[in-house]
Length: 149
Image 1 (spheres, rainbow, N blue to C red):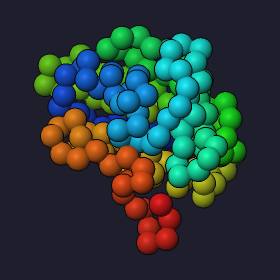
Image 2 (tube, rainbow, N blue to C red; image 1 turned 60 degrees about the vertical axis):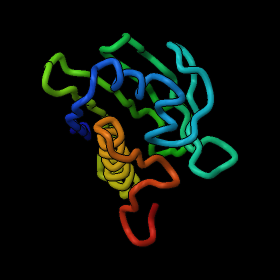
Image 3 (tube, helix red, strand yellow; image 1 turned 180 degrees about the horizontal axis):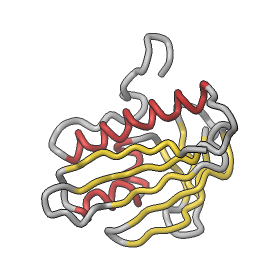
């Protein structure tokens, strides 16, 4: 089984990348409306134009300016059990944000493919915003087809 991984180089201070990945304000700016506690053991629910969170993550690790790690515990079935990790490189020229979503399934599913593609667009939006462009959080996110948000 292979993991689905995304790696996006971001020219921004390591502390700024960490802030975006570890605070509700930062997450809402590049991904979606969020509610909950951004602390180890806390739960974060993400809303995509719904009254209830579409996915809920438990925060497993917040190592200041180094690592953010969440595990999906509730919500959309295709996400439950997956993890997301943000890691900043030590390079002085480029900071990197990585995400990792264990495939954990014997066969590819269209929801996994869609989620992977969609997550990549949010990471590109994160890079854009941190490098002086626009953030592209839901509902102003990048469409991945003419009919699917």
